[in-house]
Image: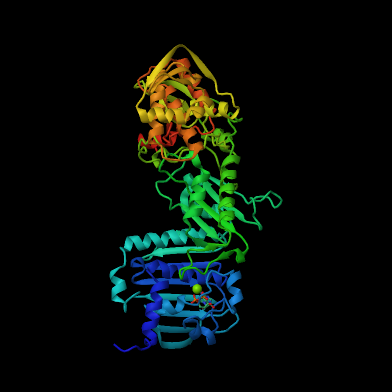
Length: 597
Ligand code: ADP
Ligand code: MG
C-alpha cells in the first residue's frame, strides 16, 4: 500500500477514540463544557445507558452563532490561546477535542444561544459533517443531543459494556460532580425517569443527603482546610488546601471506589493519593474494608499538569509527595478531631428518645445536618474479613494519635456461647466478641506502656524452657533486643534451646514457652524489613496470646470491667488485626426486623 494522508473524517474517527471511549465519556465532556460555560443548572437525559441518546442542557454562556461551526472542529477551543496558558489551566476543558470527537462518531444536534444574542442557532451533524443549520429562538445556554453513538464505528460498538454498566458509570460521575459543584442544580434522568437531582443550594451537605441519604451522611466527618498560618509539610513551598468529607471508621466499604478525589475542581484518578487516604485510617479499619472520602484538593494550577492524558483524569503533580502529605494530614486531622463527648450530657439511661443521645456525636457530622444517634451500620460491614494473622497492614507500634472512640456507655446483660458479651446501649444491642475486644484493650495498654518506655515485665518463679528449630533459634537471637525491650528475659540454654526468665506482665498467666513459640512463628512468616512492623507483630501476638479466649466463662464483674476498658480504647471497633470487636443491632434495625416500622 502506498503511503497517503488519511481522509479527514477517518482521522477524526481515530482521534475520537482517545476521547470518547464510551457513553460515559460523552457525558463527562459535555458536563465539563457546561460547567466551564458557567452553568448553574445542568440537565442530563440518558436513554439506553447512552447508546440511544445522551442529552445535556445547560443555562451557561452559550456559543456565539458565528463560532458554532468552529467549536466542532478539531483543536478548536476558547479556553487556551498560548502555550503558556497550558501551565495555568483553570477550566475543565482546554484541548478543544471533545465536540469534534463526539460529533465524528454520532448524530449530534446542538441548539445554543449566546447570552447576549437575540437568536440561537441549531446545527445538525452526522459523523462530524454539518447537514443542517438554522436560526432558532432558544433560551440562553446550550443543549447538545448525541444520538446513535458509534453508529459509524461498529468495532467500538461491539466493545460497549452492558447498559447497566454505562448507567452506573454515568450515575457515579454525575454524583461526583454534583458534590464538587453544590452551586449547580443537576438533574439526571434515565429513560424518562428522574433518578437523581440536587438543589444547587451551594451547600455540600444538601448534595450529600441527595447522594448518600441521611444514614451515611450522618456518619461523615468534615475535612477542613488547615488554617492559613498552620505549619506546612516539610519542604512544601506553596499552599495545598484539602477539604471535603471522610467517613467515620465505623462505616466501611469493600472497595476503594468511594474514595473520590478532585484537583482544582477536576475529578481525577490517583492510586497514590487514594493510598494516602487509606493510610490515614491505618488501624481504624477492618482488613479489606475502605472508607468513603470526598476530597477537594486545591493548589496553584502551575503545580499540576492536567495535560497528561486525553481524558484528563490522570494528572501529574510537580511535587507529588507534598500533595500526598497534605492529603494524609488533612484526613488524619479530621479523624482525630472527631473526639467523642463520651458520657456527655443528655444521656439518661432508659430514655426512650434517641435524640437524647446526641451528645456522643455532637461534633462529627457535617455542620448543617442533624448529627444525632450513634449508629454503627453493622449490615454495611459485610462478611468478616479473613483471619490473616500476619497482617500486612501492621500499624507502627505507636498509639495511633486518634480518638475515634464513639462507643456509648453500655450495660452488660450477659454472655452467650462463652464467647460474646451482650450489652445494651443507648440505641439497641451490642454483641461484643470477648476475645477481639480484650485483644484491642491489651494492645492499647501495651502500646501506652511502650510509649512511656515502661513495659511491665513479670519474672517467672520457675523459669521455662523453650526448644526451637535451628532457624527459629536464629530468629530469637536476631530479635533478642526487641524481645527484651518488650518484657521478655531470655537466655541461651544449649543448642536451639532458651530459658525464659521473665515475660511481658500481661502474659503472666500464659504458658511462657508456648507464647515465645507463637511469637517466633509469627516472625518466621514475617517478610518486612521494617523494625517498627516487626515490633508491632510481636506486640499483637503477645496481646492475642494474653487475651481471654472464646470458651472462657466471664463473671459479671469481669464483663463490666472489659466493657469499661473497651470504651476507653482509642480504636474500640476493631481488634489489632482489623477484625470487628462488636456488632451493633440498632433499635431501628430491631424494629424493622420485627416488622414494627
Ligand atoms: P474544550 O472544552 O477543550 O475547549 P470542546 O471541544 O469541548 O473543547 O469545546 C469547544 C469549544 O466549544 C469550547 O472551548 C467552548 O468555547 C465551546 N463550548 C462547548 N460546549 C459549550 C457549552 N455547553 N456552552 C458554551 N460553550 C461551549
Ligand atoms: Mg470540553
